[in-house]
Image: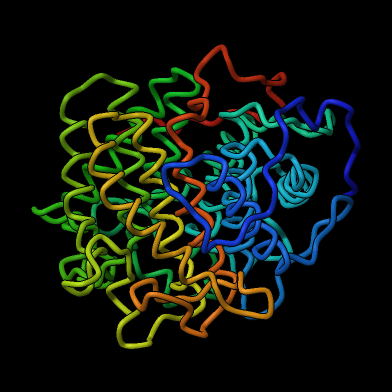
Length: 416
């Protein structure tokens, strides 16, 4: 898709922060946060081969889903720092990947696109909708409509033939192993998007569906009694044997969904669930006594087993934890305790390469560990730029979000 230029794409803003070395980060000084974020954002976008005019997939070994995740990270960068440098590129990418039915089911990726992959593009386009991110092509449905189309696609695959419900990890039979595995990330994606659409539209269908996904996830044990979010289970044995491994991004996805529902419904149960999910997520911090409140991916990081996907997970946890503070302000003090230390450590880890600004993986080594990549850049970026969340505009709600007339027929996926 070719980008359609718009005079309204770049808003009038305050002066953009200067590039700043990550080592100069002061977590209490917004100007240094913005400057460091600008530097890491440039490192992050150096991995993306697309342009303002045309989308391009990320090069190997990065999959299509991580490109959607990248767009979400950079939308946060634009929002928190008010730097529009990458806005045209982001808009081009989001529109180019919408697919023929405007639901992020892309023929090019038929056979390899999973429910969790689609969800990550959904997180990005939903953020665009909630912020009235400029939509430069009036011939394409508005961001909110794209979000609802994506949700319709995901919700249509809710499967009660095994485990009493849930989404499978994969969509297409060409990925047979994933068709019989119901995972927390795919279901968490549907949960969070349902919650955000409920808040954005006021539509009870989304609220009911969010409750249904939560009840199912908790009922099968993927959210345990201590509010740890576990990876998934096989539908071959009716989800009776839960895979107990846990990842930070799974927790973050459910955390933000619960926080949005607390804000939307005013129901204390969602505030409590938010707090308990955050408390359980402290397991992703403080790997050693001398590394208090420093984030790490405990399933793989200390044994050097993180694959390309896993290297980006901390970033999504940061994204959603920060966002949750706007929905449930009572968790702000805890998030600050955790993330001020983590952001400081992440900045120290971004001291590699020729310019001394390349980010490493392990933040608890008090410097750059020599292991870099897109995921490492995104993790540091989200963890540092999120420090600006308190001064940002909260996501818009019903009647604040710009919409087009409905173009894609609605389908009924009310909770059963």
